[in-house]
Length: 449
Image 1 (tube, rainbow, N blue to C red):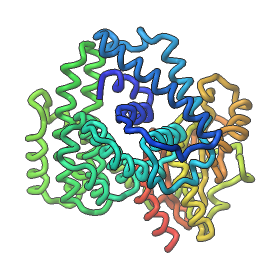
Image 2: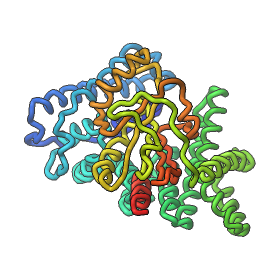
Image 3: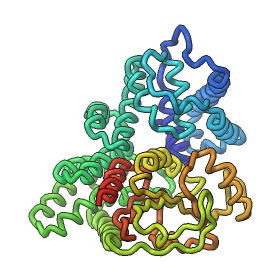
Image 4: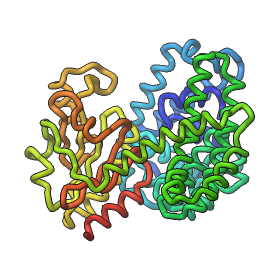
């Protein structure tokens, strides 16, 4: 990943994927399968996107100062770039959601349809598109990037076999340490969720090594002491996220020799510049949060504060007793929240008749689509624009004043999903747009009780 790409990723992982994809080489195609007026218009915008991206990357290669502060050199062009990405999202053809078979598509068509899927945050087609792309692209960097992305998509779907098929050692070794650490950490978490602790620990050790390499690389590239300190703290949280659940369970089991062995193996992976005591302190903080989360399980869910309701009459947990309730805490600006919506639509279609009720809860943010808005304006935009555009088919509640409900449910990051059983007790908490298969399995379990 080049420095320009790294800088752009501060605005979200979406840009990273598009830029990585832009690195692929086209072999051309004889005739397009995307020949409707809608796809032709979208393709025109895609060409503009390519042109701007290529120009930015050329500037980076020619000017060493560019990578240090791209915004300084791009000025208004950067805003034009993001406006173009937004336009792409608005012009995605409606039939994309119905496309399931990309066999026989040429490279150019695959590029265009993948770009459409990314800017509209439709994850379902991406793996199939990538499989077809791997039959066409030839350069090593493009193949590695597509395989890495396909592995990540497989992990999101809970398909560990496919994840390991694409995230081979040779593919991972060519990735940036930070990206490699993230993928290995995801494998560890997935095996942990599947009650395969030994494999989870094996991947955790590899993830810690990758994060250690990332910390050394970041330190060498960063001249700002304040930012260097922030990066060090962030890496410590990465260590903790992958280590803490495993260490917590070992401690709970009372297996001191296993704990000592695991810690010894982890210490071997750390760079000399990292003090284990700092890692341990971060892990201890994470284990305290795990203990708090687990303490809430099996206890009555907190009643909701007063909300404005969209798509439903006033709802309360008391009125939903006897149902399995999925609460999705979200915000309109949260891209991972939006990425989770297709899964929730699927769950609603599959399980509503069996007793599942999905409820989206949010608060007034004071902004919408980059503009400052009043509560009344925000509520109207949520109702008239956001909900139809994102195809939110479940009730949405906006807390009338403050964020008491989020506080009661200890929401610190979104999306934050809570599953409540038919008796009104919390049985599952998940933060982030990941582990959808795990969430679905818990839904099935609660519905069967």
